[in-house]
Image 1 (cartoon, rainbow, N blue to C red):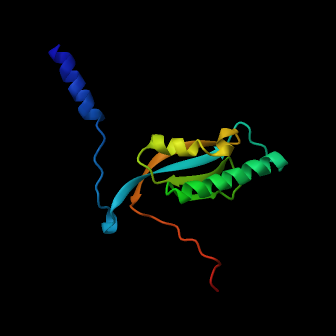
Image 2 (image 1 turned 45 degrees about the horizontal axis):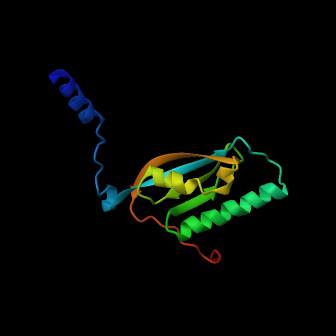
Image 3 (image 1 turned 90 degrees about the horizontal axis):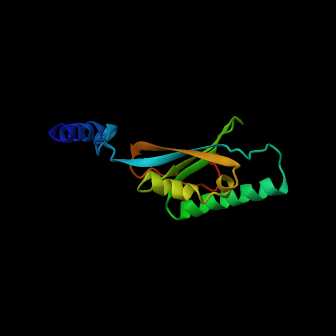
Length: 136
């Protein structure tokens, strides 16, 4: 019994995640975001059809909703036409919450895209500011 308890305690200590510093290089306050890589899904097709156009519009509307709700910091497509199609950066409390929001994406629901999530440690309160047009 004592050996089993010792093994359990040793395993728990070894498996405990390392505490990350609250202040990173340059004095930036740090936090965890959840990055979603969007890949071509099992139902991906390169053709533009009324259905794929409807799904794309619903996908973009969902991105705007998640941004308005304060859950999505960054989203955008990759331009090299590979299997990796786009990126999400979520500001949520857990990877499960990020998955929950990602599951609201109509393109993921339809199998057109699939998502791979990873925790990412970066400067707290990163933002993207929209502009009306580039200044010349």
